[in-house]
Length: 141
Figure 1 (spheres, rainbow, N blue to C red):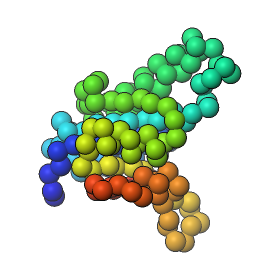
Figure 2: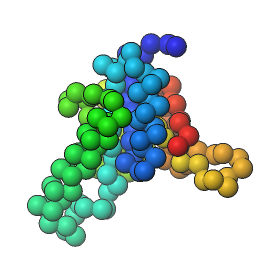
Figure 3: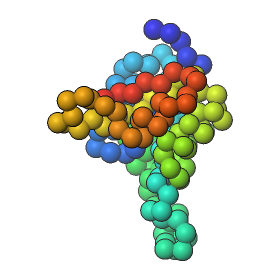
Figure 4: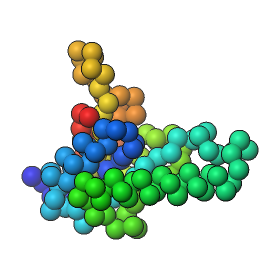
């Protein structure tokens, strides 16, 4: 398998995230030092005037803890400086971070509906694939 300099794994913290992380851990065991992880908190859930700043910070802290626990539970020991928690529109933020860190591989989970006979990727996965010049792996979860 080709060696990559920087890998970016996008995790949405859905129940299927365990499956995605486990598969990445198996496939890229030798490249774990090059692995960066991102979770995007969808804008509007806790920003603006609707949520108090203290509660917003608690949500961010809780999300960061869940993300680190998920990685650890699946055998991925990623350095803190390579774990990114951001807010906004997921596909935009994933592509933005991939550019910033110069990732040559972006890994995203693709939620395929059980009755979707075409097996088309979900909207976030499709948007991440669009316009990326580096490789993108969409893992069916």
